[in-house]
Length: 381
Image 1 (cartoon, helix red, strand yellow):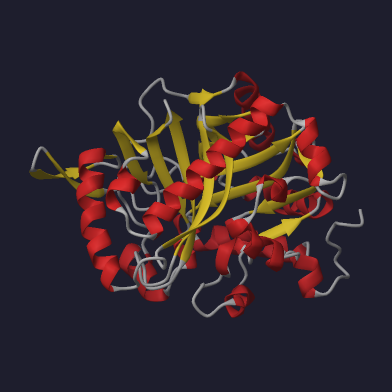
Image 2 (cartoon, helix red, strand yellow):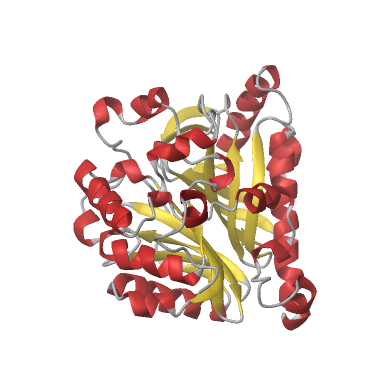
């Protein structure tokens, strides 16, 4: 297809980094994620039921306002987005420390709102000195439902949580208009060598614990989103490329951390090997996506033998958490499978944008090398 990536193309053409489009997504509207090659944004919006479109737009506005409050260091405004019983988890780091009832104690994975408040007050005091308000966290893209939740791509800026900036996928489970559970997922390979050594000391993948959703809590999603995700996951877990491709629109965009290349580091000195706003780890077009899955589907933690953990969202998009199995069953931060999250934009039952996040340094060096070799065979790295 004309919008696909060919082996004969030059490096910029082959990779389709979409630099301008990606940077524009920081201030983009819903139409950014829809396949404009087939119709105008206005025509596409008209094909989406008004209630679903309004629900999705409300979720995007919610996410923009949330990260604006965080970026400008407004503690009370940020905390107002969380439910009173809301919790937060960093799936990449796992363990958090918190204070419950005024008593310091370890928190395995989940931090309650009381601990979130204490942490935010300390962090915001630090960030006001450097890097300063407006230089902390940037919204990139959101897909989901204000009724159920979804996924939001955002960026932590350099000099905040790490010396370098890095991109995250926030998994938001929303109930009664507030964040009930937030899980941040990111790839430590994106940050500086010093940051990586502090996390994975001595090149040994970090070992910690995760809490995740409560037992029996498998979804907060519409029936349509739940059924779509289950079918997509079955296709990914089957290892059959043809089954997977049926879910993608012809002009879809795939963002995946294993598309990282060493050369990507030259895109931005402060952005590690991704480039800012995920622009170094994405490809566009169903033909390029087909080559990606053909090369590495059996090697992906979110592919063969993976399991579905939780789903949020509605018919226009959402997100799901997953855990790797098979060759990755004994890996990951809790050594029970590499965990990650995927956000999808949907139109007419097809994926127009998929964003995947997990910590690639929880994979073994030989596993990463095998992926890189396979992708190089398809001219994707």
